[in-house]
View 1 (cartoon, helix red, strand yellow):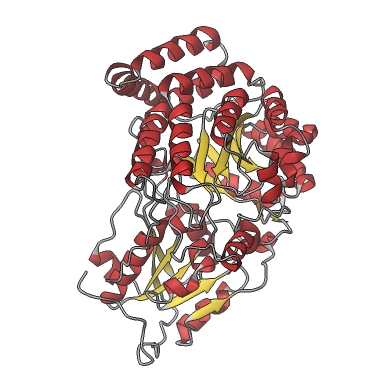
View 2 (cartoon, rainbow, N blue to C red):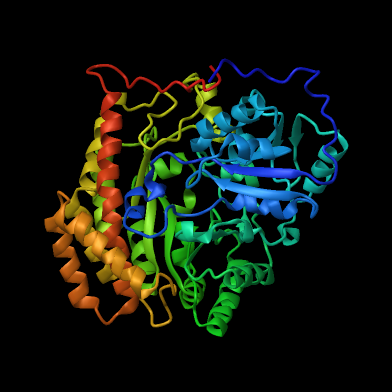
Length: 543
């Protein structure tokens, strides 16, 4: 970069009206490698990334019909100067982990003299950071007010900061602009049923951003979105991105029943997965309806096997039923389970690492997301750490393996070494594939569950041969790979759901095994003997 990009001056803020025919370039920044990127798995698939940006295509549907919109997903495409110069308005969104890419795109657009606007989770959580590089920042959910914001741009009255306080009625939110996407790039397609979560986990910013009263779309809205996807040729997986799909369990049940009928009418073209709280295990009718609607698996926030740590963070919903038994209930009912785990709670005992390893193995969770606890801005945990004088002043870096941004009760080096031990154990190749095998045995797939129609037979053959070459012949873990392969194929060759899921887990090893090694190495770089982990400093991409 050619020098600092300064906040706009008063003169710069006197923008001329854009008029009715506005050209908008929407940019979704790339993600750094992470648990959720499935980067190693993408090397074996025909697709290139997991999923597209739902937020931007939802905003695109809110834009005036006269506006011309282009979308560039930097996960798969680069933004050229010509792309930026084409636009009257450059619109960027993203999460905290995409911070660097967001700021670079905004700064680059402004150097080329383009108007910029930014919104989304990171902008809503830390707007002051983005006001330094963007002309306009939107905080909150703009569904019901974006028409007014658009008119401000057309008339030359756009504000520097739009603070949307009201929670919109999502029953009025239109079908996202799925037509803007290049579907061949993606493994999954995101849709959203609800926003908000009724619980009060103190580390979670979802309840801050979207509230504790879940707001849901009507079933007919979701069916209209699925009809749109089907009309565009989408017959793969669909991720219902709700942070807690069962936040309103009664309406979730109503939707699941409608989804079952839609699937029957269309020949089960889609396979669903979602995120839910662990108390889903206490709602058998809902689980049954989800399975009949062709939900294959669910991500649950387990966090810790320590009851004291769960109590500390106010995750009381995980204390209502034994967590291991809850996962077994879901497995028996037809939902394969993946989960999230956290290290760094004040109440974590000395043996928390052995407890985490034991829990993940006993629960038979192959895809276990493990990370350090972070105090995210605007959360109760952040406020508490700041009040106690334990907060370390830097913008939270969401890279996997980044040290906590507060002074932990457990010595930093002990926490880091324990984190490494846990990750090395659960993603050691033999442990990973043994756990995967047990998960298939425990998961009671139902006849109503059908893998999505795509990939085609030719696509499946390509993926198999890539896997055999990269994993079965060239990898360091080929012995564990072949042992697992022959096990699940010999047992489930005639069980199409388990065969599909078994192979999905097989190729996921190409991501999770090296991913764990990379994160362990990243943590190692921060460890010095008899000293706390050095805390990451936010990069100044403006300098």
